[in-house]
Image (cartoon, rainbow, N blue to C red):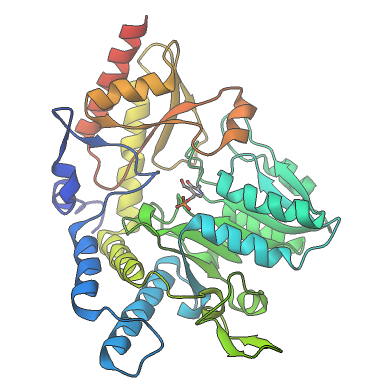
Length: 408
Ligand code: PLP
């Protein structure tokens, strides 16, 4: 589909859950940054796997096992295509972005020593802070934090000044889940590489909404979650540039990741199997593959354009409501609108909207350091997916106006 042929009505019809009501109102689901709804074909692909091809992968000579292995490896190839990785073996299946970050922090951490530095940014999700913090505390590594400007951009000048010979890892979000800012990962990665650092990208909010090309971005590692890309929960993946992935020590251990085990010494398989200990979420991977094919057929550029248009419409209309203040006003933004309404606590706002059928999120969005920097505890956040409509933006704006009137 292109922007001209993008038909939100046809797309919506593929999502059974969108037919439901909330408190007697048509549901306006504006929380896709938390998790996206699932098209019927993803639900069916997962069910069909269990109904027709379920077996454990890699271990059997019989046909069903081969079919299951092919379905799982086929999904790996689809993930590689979604990220434009050079080879499917650069893709490791995990539970989601959080597990990817824990794996990378643990395994990359083994190559670090006291005095080394990890650069994070002030707009990171807790999933891209805490795993590094645990490693840093254990090893004596210093974490440094790239500041965020008032309009929600990274301060790139400060970033460049922070890079140095001690910088070993730069880990940055591609799109901020709290501000909607799209970070210039290409530039960030180029500067990091010239300082000799490894670049890790949290793509949780980018993979569902933007065309991602890990080779063009110059990312060494790039992680995302299946459930935010219209796939099942409990499955996600990360890309690792081949040479680095081959050198990376394992994270979890056990079956399937070993070459040979004896009580004296165990050797490991090559990547990606070295990072996939135990029976993985096979049906989840199959569902994720289907979701990514759905995105490719719909067209990532058309999806981005649609979501950005809705976010801009929401901003324009919300800006007229007295007391609304936006967080994240940088020029490069995705379909996320974070805001507060003077006199209305974000949690009250979300409850009032819920009663009118509008599902938004209120809170710190797992970015407590960011909100501390802005001096607030929470915001309301509307986040758009490919199935959202202008009417849903209207419902949001009417609900916010109503809440504001109630409280003043
Ligand atoms: N990173 C970002 C930017 C996110 O928005 C999220 C989830 O909201 C995560 C990481 C964590 O993703 P998950 O809970 O799927 O592991």
